[in-house]
Every structure is written in C-alpha cells, then in structure tokens.
Length: 551
Figure (cartoon, rainbow, N blue to C red):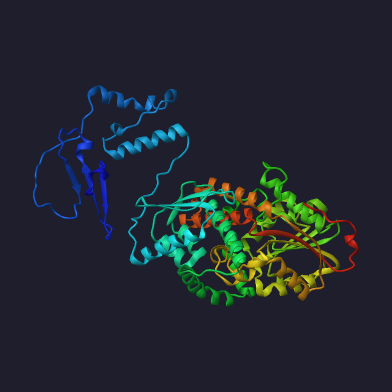
C-alpha cells in the first residue's frame, strides 16, 4: 500500500516488471468494520508477512425466499416501462457479476452494443523507452505551439503540449497504453506514429475525431514552423531529428531498389486491390468507385457525387457515340458502365487486379453492355496497339512510380489518336515537399500502396513534355471534395467493422485501414495533398473548339 493513506482505495493494484501483480483490499471500505485500524487483505503478496495478526471466516450473503422468488420473475419485468434492474445480486454477488448486469442494462437502455475497454499495458518503460519518452516529450514541447495535444498515460500521468488559439483551435486527447509509443516515434518519426497506432499503443478519447485532430495538429505546426524557419532562415536540429534520419536511411536504399517493373507492379496492385471485393463493397458506394467524388450539396449521397465526377471526366474527354475510349486502371468498372450508358461509345479498360476484372465483367453482364465493353488483365505497357479517341485514367498514375512516369506518357502518346483527348485524375503531392516525400519512408507506400508515388503537378508536366507531344488544355483541383469522400468511406468502414472481421481480417488490419482513411482525410482537409483533373491534347486539335466542362 502507498505510504500516504490518502492515496488508498478500496481496491489497490501493484504491478511488477515481471508482469506479476498484487491486489490489496481495504476491508474497512468494502465491509462495515467498526475499527479505526485498517484491515487489509492482499492477494499474491510480493512477500510473505512476518506475523499473522488475525484469522476469521466469512461468507457471501444469501437471498431471502422473497428475494429469490422475485429474482425468478426478473426476465418478465426487465425493461418494462423503461425500467432496468442491475446489480451483483442478479448472480453470485461478486463485483464481476455487478459489472455484467450493468453492461446488460446499459445495452438495453441504449439499444446498442457497448464494448468494454481493454486493460492497458503496464506503463513500466525499459531504460530505452524512458529515454525515448523524454526525447519525444521535449520534441512535442518545442514542436507543438498551436493546437492542444494531451497525452494521458496508463499510470495516470498527463502531458499537455501547445494550446488552442486562433491559428489552430483543435484539441486531441490521447490515451497512451504502451511505452513502446515513445520509442516508435523517437526512432521512426511519422511512420513510427502510424505503427504505434497499428500496434494499439495508443487510442483516443474521441474515437471519431481524435486521430483526425492529432494529424491536423501535427500538420498545422509543421506549416507554422516552416513559416517561422523561413523567417529566421535557419533550422534547429534535435536528438530526435538525428535518430529519425538514421532510421530513414534503411528505407532510402529500399525505395531506390523498388522500380515498378511489370512483375513488381502486378504484385503491388494485387497486394491492395485483390484483398476482397466484398471488403471494398463494405465502405465504398454502390458503384464501387474508389476515387475522389465531387459534391454539390452538404448532405448529398456519395453515389450521386461519384456519378457527377465520372460524368465530368467523360465530358472533359469529349467522348461521343462512335468513339473508342481507353481506361487505364478501370477499378471495379464504374466508368465503363457510365461512359457507355451516357454516350453509347465503345470501351476498353485495363487492370492488373484479377479480383477487379472478375467483378467488372460481372457488372457489364448484369448491365447488358458486354458488346460495348472489353476488359483486359494487362500492364499499361502491354496494351495491344490501337489508336483510341480518348484516354481516361483515374487515380492510376499514382501506382506508376517516379521513375516510370516518362514511360507512362510515352505509352499514352502511342495509344491516343492524333485528334484524341486524354483526361487524367490523380492525387498530387505539394511541389515544395515532393523530392523529400519520394525519398523517405511513408505510411501509404509501406502499408497501403506498395510501389506507389503521389506525383507533384510539376513532375507530371515534366514527364508529359519529355515523353509526348501533349500539351495541357485544362487543369482543375477538386481536392477539397476528397475530405467528405474519405469521411463517407470511414463512416461506412466503422459501421461495417463486424462484417469486415467476419471476412477473416483481424484488429490490426482494422487499425491499418483506420489510419489510412483518417490520415488521408486530414491531408485533404489541410490541403497538404491535392486532387487534379488535367486534360491533355496535341496542338491544333479541332475537337477542342468547345470549352471544357468544369466541376
């Protein structure tokens, strides 16, 4: 027991570094013992007491005949007139019985399932974790000046960084369950934060907004610090910076050895898109469109917003009846169905995902459009020679990779008819951080899209000018629409968590995807990433006499 009696409670828990435990009951508070002298009972004592002061027998209370009779009628009256009964008396009288009865009553009152929080791991850090905690705390104290991040440790310690202000009014309260949290951040930076979440080292008081707010706070302070650093024309290195850069070195060599060859591209695409068609259907809209939608109204359905996006790209590519359209990376076939229905054109799409191919072929049969639609399982570099009237590619170029961007545009140059139009939609990294981003470890490429690279707009333009005769006819940033798109996916993902687990995925997989969706949403909400629709053509194209559609 603590030396200070004011810190005593009815139940007192003591953990050890060997993962043993000891529990001491303060009987004066649990039972009516008329004594000023404390009576303590210890289970698994760390050491055997020198003297036994007292021994006595006790027993659990027994229900009276009337109480036992009433207990038998409990099922008939439970919940009637909105009244729920609960207590340890409903079973054997133990504390655990009271908890079980209380949980059942809460579920009945709320009309929904409630989950018990897991016991946190003991916050007994190793010496390396203790050192990492000191470094991370010092770093956060220097780094976070706007917005408020609060860390609540399993042992009860509370660390607060920054403050709510006009620049950033966001607050996030984290529960740290494992000291490994600090070690991961100290040695692997942003990627370490993601891995700490994936491994369950921390959680949030606000389950829906907590992770989003954390990432928004970190982004806001990154941008604020950059502005202040530019103003004073200098940076400041800390031990955490040094550790982070040393850890990143092992990823740099790996990134340079992962050029997206045809074989590696097929493997990378399969790793993500062949997870399960049923899985993807549990968070996307009915059309199974896996890219940024375009919303016009706040409460508009995701399906309507996705249909608008597809229609806009079709109009920007000026597709008409009699045209033949090439779709590079057709996903689950939503563009195929819509472009043929909307224009009556012929359509050819390519993918590297066997699961997507199977699903899209089924949708085409179901829609009765098989005579207009052809799906191919092949790399963009191996598409059979043909001159298409239009090329549309939605969020596929992110899988090409920095080194293969020129080759992608060279292929598109060879596939597009002389008066053809190409419409490209892609997620874009900011110009000022592109070189740093593509050379350093990134959560999305390590866990979600292996081999992926979000190109900057300048990189796309550079590849176009180097490897094709294309010129840019139109550019539009629809990025602000991706935040509501991602939050719709996140809400669907959360609502269908049990169904996802039933497919055979585990809790770690759930946390990986939670981090992916929320991390992406924060990047879009903060305008850290953009989403561009770019239209390409060749000089002198008469088909461009009419102005292009806009969102």
